[in-house]
Image 1: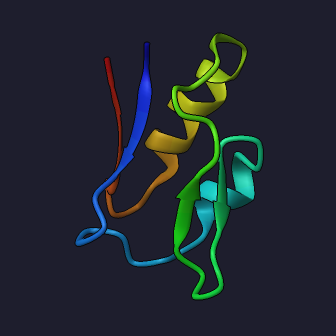
Image 2: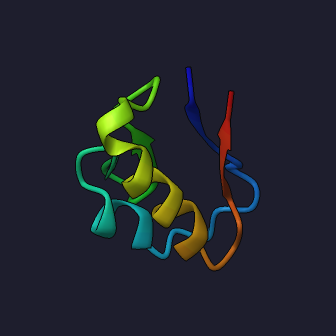
Image 3: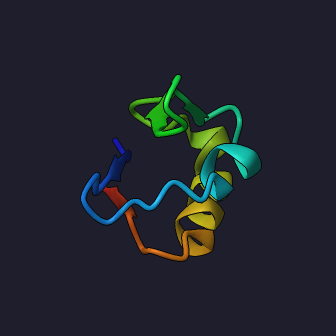
Length: 64
């Protein structure tokens, strides 16, 4: 199983993750990311890999 993990200290709230992976991540009331799909479904794994790569703060990570 693959899990998307957020480093809350590194996250600057740019919103690229929930903007580009709405089926996996969304924002809470403060604009912070919230993981929707845990574990990440196999059909969304490519999208999860892209969103990890897009994060300018490197606050997202995929873990087995």
